[in-house]
Length: 335
Length: 232
Image (cartoon, rainbow over all chains, first blue to last red; front, top):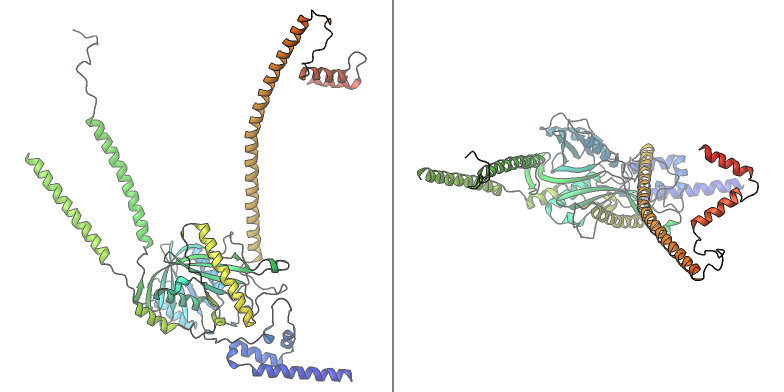
């Protein structure tokens, strides 16, 4: 008798849950979410998961979560990441680091040619990507990063400077792989047109779509973009939530996870990997020119040294000690 | 005279050629114009942007409110602390917004998943940190030892100075004692003790007396130790 009553109660609760699910607005459910809805109807496991709310941790299993009003405009946003042949280990590691940070990124094989970049657009199209990040390495030392929206543009060419990868040991932070980051932008990004464009492109590549199937549902890292010295400075921090007794005394802390890099925008093109030049940075000096300049400085150093030596020699020659009239006054002469 | 004029004219020609060349070079760099097509940029931005349509949760972007700029980007420490502070502000803001939306923020303690850095990597990081700390401690110890050595030298010098002073004062007091005895005409027959000599010599004598005995039978231990001393 008792069991029957319980069974009836359970059935009623299930019906309520189902009704709730159906009543949820369709806009809140993306591809992934609608899959999980089918699951929840049939799957006993999913039901059990829904029931296991963990109090105190803020963890709410997906089924029980308050439905969040998301537009999901970027659910199909994907980035193709690849390097050119001849990339040094540092830049290869940098690329791999970025791949571990962005769940909606696809890695592609090294590109053989440096000049026909349209191949990248084709590759992105084949992989169903809406943007591409291409590391173009030259002379085994300089690295340029192309950030392009494919297939119709725009694209930005950055010079990559001051790279520290995650493998370096001084960064102590660590966070879940593919958890959704928040993106911090300095207010300076809203000041001019080209910075606004750069900001938009960065958001589109680095933001993880809501409920992406690879992403994890917690917030534990933050990517930061600062605008200083005509460059974009990138930092990635772990967000450390206070635990236990610390909760009341102190709030969040951050610890840096890496990688670090500096992106100096050189040019912005209207198309993907080409087209009309919309913006050009005046302050950029190509690394080739920099090297040439420093060499020139060394050349003049040597010239100066030689000239000084010659001048000294000439001076000595001109000012030789001449014998005075009275020099041989006290000398024992023959006379 | 003619040759001098010729030389001067030549030099002037050379100068003018140089000037021309330099002028041409400057002109070339000045003539290079840098594109900044703001209208084109805006149009392009309109073309591809979606953030104006998206809800905040779609991209979780926070633009800082603090418009300060780093004073000197080449000063690593101040730059990084500046970056850290701005990041912390927006992290707090992000947590607040997520809580408002009812989205989970903290992961439960029993939620294990793949991390960005492997355990092995983190172990290496930790050992590196430990190593650095140890290095720091060792350096500190060495520095202290060095300083104490320097200080020790001072102490030693001070001691020697004190000893010479003591010696002087003892000699003085001995002289005084002698004079007093002379004045009194040696009335005490040399039995009045000298009070000034309380120093090392007296203590040494007393120590030895207690150890080896003063008259009487010598103890075995004392004999042994004296033997040992001889052997050395």
